[in-house]
Length: 80
Image 1 (cartoon, rainbow, N blue to C red):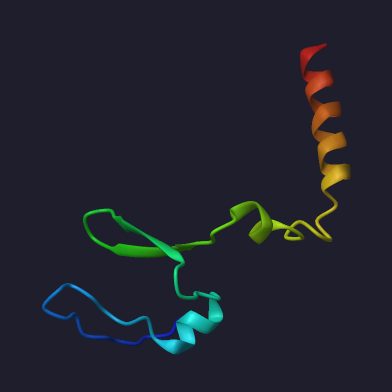
Image 2 (image 1 turned 30 degrees about the vertical axis):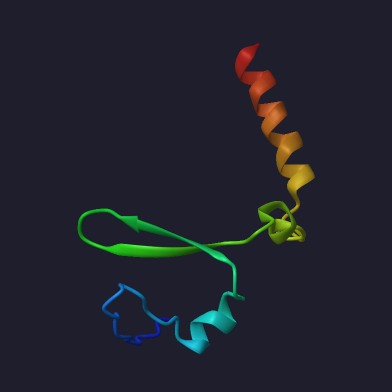
């Protein structure tokens, strides 16, 4: 789902986040963005004001309890 959009940078180094991207990632006024520069690519990561609340419900349907119990069983067998 790659979307290619462009914006201009002002004299003060400001730019506008395109509305499609703002809507897709629920970016609102006052939200924080983290800029990661790996030397070749710049990544912009939106960070919610309350990261814990933003993650709530993300693990639904992942059968996390069964995965944890299996992991613990595997660890016990490996340590025995």
